[in-house]
Length: 356
Image (cartoon, rainbow, N blue to C red; front, side):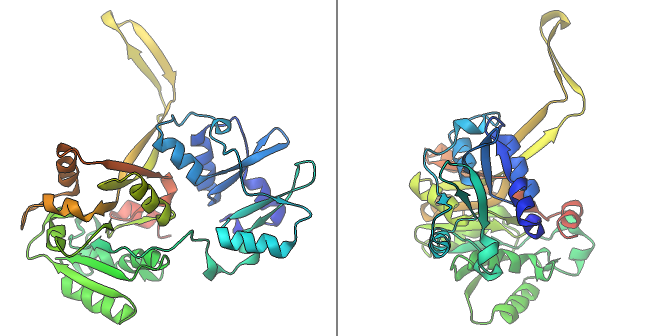
């Protein structure tokens, strides 16, 4: 991560030109582990662009090839070289600003103050807290992670010094969430014993124990009439590194019945792609194209009213629920996160990739 770089190199690492595409900006954010870039026109500082700016543009259905200059905000949070340092620190803390550009009186960038330069690791810049429940689906057998899942349930496989389940719970605890439901089936008693030992009484955890596998949504039936309003649902083998409060705001502001958190996935095809027309005549030849998709990450926000669409004691996937919502003229939204903000650790290739 570039937090360890000298100050000058950190600033250089997040500079980007205003005519590059949104996709290029996302890739730079992923490669630098930053969610904010300093945008320039040549040597002239123009503005900042955040992951939120790009996410809002994607939600508006702008193509990934859109240049940054077309999505830059009209106003932004910057500081002048004459501003009192304590005032800068106060503004950064109150508004959870990852990086504050410092400009001279002519609008030239002369410095940038990074969050980690003045705040401790325990004061990570989370935008705002929320209290809605979180449901974690941990009932699967983890067949893609055998043979280790013959011994441990997938939810307890370690990621660094934490289990997968702890990592998900702790990521929500950072926002003030203290109400969790965990769906269990395979090796249920092992999971409950472990989690009770780790968290004791610090958070409220209730268990939805399946007598048989019910798919990625079937266990939610038991929450009918128990939850009111919105709640998160997460598979136990994925980690999303994004501001959850921004996702929740999108869900609420758009009055969605269900929001899918999507992850961008980029594919580079190392060949020329040929398109033909009638009689086999060449229509178009594209050399080594890149394709970007939004894929289902395995995390969602649901409104409790959709629980009425889930059948009792029936194997039922989240995709089945989504189709039912759409058939009933409900609203299903999609909130995108960058490729490396999503970690899928449900098979050996991805697990090893994200745990070494």
